[in-house]
Amino acid sequence: MIRRLRVPFAEAAEMVMRSEITHSGSCVVLLKAARLRSELLR
Image (tube, rainbow, N blue to C red; front, side, top):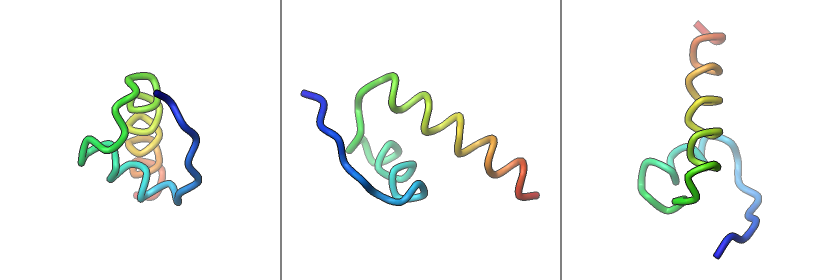
């Protein structure tokens, strides 16, 4: 089941790593955005 949650971006990325978010499309988008964000903030 997919349900919408509102959480801060960093928390959502951590939720992916802890397997609390498992929807593959959501995981891909969150992890890709996290990587791009970390590269831009260097």
